[in-house]
Picture 1 (tube, rainbow, N blue to C red):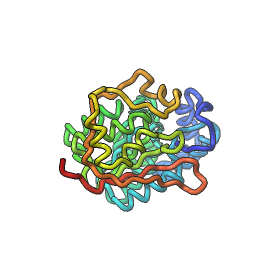
Picture 2 (cartoon, protein in one colour):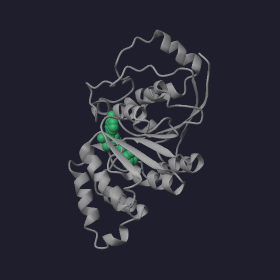
Picture 3 (cartoon, rainbow, N blue to C red):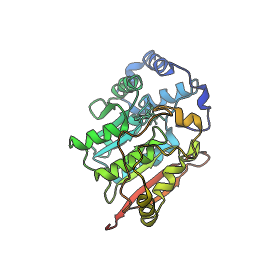
Length: 275
Ligand SMILES: C[S@@+](CC[C@H](N)C(=O)[O-])C[C@H]1O[C@@H](n2cnc3c(N)ncnc32)[C@H](O)[C@@H]1O
């Protein structure tokens, strides 16, 4: 989410559909078709009127640089909303020789809006939107053989699910040497359980895993009630009981654009210790 401009509370019901009208009513729509940058500009213009939860260009650039470095064949994002990040990063993955960008989105209405904008941007054959909960979609992607391991994962959905979804990927064996996680909103609104997890040593994680009682619950420590009740909701729980793989060694640090109150946590798998 682009922080600092407008408060979350000004988000207007139905603004996602209004965005479609705003874009498709453009008098020179034919000049926009097939140009990802122009579609992104229009989403940003409209965001000056209505608050939109898009990653935005400054934080987006951090992830784009990772795409240029890693050149992923397939990249997954958790939380697609109206398609801003899917268009920005999908275009970058395509330019860097990739094969597919996979956007996982819970809300079918948001996914429908995203698909129209992805098509307008000329990325319909490249960006694949999957509607549903991220944990179930991740498991399905792995089970079907569509994605065997995480090259680059952009995390920007239900805040308490950041940790459990990464742990699910670990348990499935999808995190391997070189896997990179880029997590949005780690300073605003913040994600203390996730930062603690990816910054823990193997020893610390083994300690926690030893005393762990397989409870199927999200860790909501440090989140506001509003964050907990958003999207999946306060009564929600992970679809699977996960502990993760404590033997994975991460190097993790925030990358914050100048003047931005928020940061992307960039986490690299640099090893896996023998258990
Ligand atoms: C902050 S928005 C994503 C913004 C988008 N990444 C961008 O930068 O353009 C969060 C999105 O995550 C979706 N979401 C929330 N929980 C989810 C879950 N468990 N699985 C999949 N999507 C989820 C929401 O419906 C919402 O559209």
